[in-house]
Image: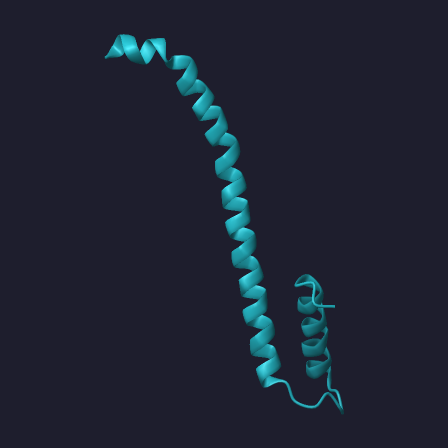
Length: 77
């Protein structure tokens, strides 16, 4: 058994290198997808609570600024 492992050590090294490249890419894509879902959920929640923008207080102005920011982040310009 040890002889077989020793003979195929190059293959195991190659697989380790491939995994060290692929795993971070998969993790990044999953985190990005979760981040986009989170932004969409936040935007939906803000829009549900949104009322008429006039007259605008400082709090409402900040809320609308956040809405615009989230829309740009989501590419919904």
